[in-house]
Length: 335
Image (cartoon, rainbow, N blue to C red; front, side, top):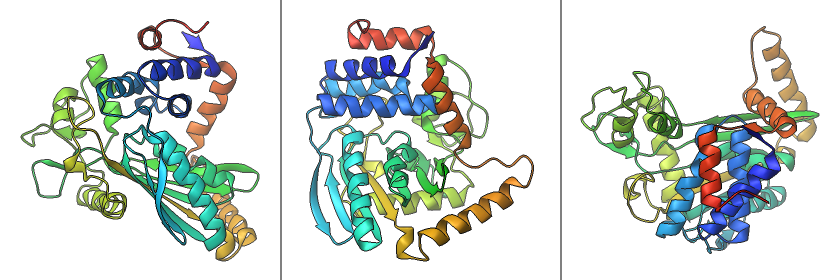
C-alpha cells in the first residue's frame, strides 16, 4: 500500500507519543525514520518504530528526556542525551558543530548517554546545508569480534560523511563496518529468510545463514582485520572521548537489557578555514567530473537521493503488515 510522506510521519509520531515520547522527541524520531525509509534504508526506517516504542514503554529509553550541552571548550562540546532516543540529541550536536565550525574552522560535537543512532548520514544534512563538510560516527551494542577473538566485542560502528557541492546534491557516504547492516539481518529474521553466507557467524564462531543465529552471534567485519580495526577507532571517538558506554557494556537492542548509553560524534569542517570555499567547490567538481567520465560510475549517495525524490512525489509503498503494525502502535488510523 502506498501512503504519502506526511501521513506516515504523523502516524509514526503518534505511535511514539502513545508509547511515552514527548512531542519533540516523537516528531524528530518519526522524521528520521521516514527519511531513512524514503532513501531506501528500510533497516533504519519505519520497521524500527515498534522497537523504539517497546524501549519507551519498558524504560530503556526516556521519552521525556531533554538533551543538554554539559561541557564546551572552543570547537568542542559534549551533549548529554539523558537516556532519550538519539534524534533530538544528535540534532543539537549537529547544530552546535555547525556553529562552532563557523567560528573555529573545525568542530567536534560528542553525544553521550544516547540510544540507537539510525541512518548515520541523515544527521549530517544540516552540516552540508550550512556549506560545511561533515563526519559522523556512533558505537552500538556488540556485534563484531575484536580480530582474533570469538565473542562479539565492537558494535557495527557506522561511519558517515557528507560533502556539499555547488548547485548539486552533496556526496553522501554511509556505511556500517560489517559486511551488512545489522538492521538488514533483522529484517531477514522478521521475514524468516536465510542470509547469504559470509554475512555473519554464530555464537561458536561458525559461518551461518540463519539470521537469528547471526543476531546472537557476530557480524563479519568489512575487510576483515581492517574493518575490525576501524571499529576500534570509532569506539574510541564515540566512547572514550564522550564518557558513553562501550559496545560490550550495552545490551542488545533486540531483547531484555539495560538502558543503552550509546555515544555519537559529529565533526564539521569549514572549507573557508583551509584552501577556501571557492577552491573546495572547484576541486571537488574536478574530481566528480573525472569520476563520472568513466561510464558506469555512480556517486555515493546518488541512489538514496533519487529514491527520496521519488518518494516525496509518489509516497512510500509499504507492506500491509508494516502499515498494520504502525496503525496498531498508533492506536488507530490518522484521521
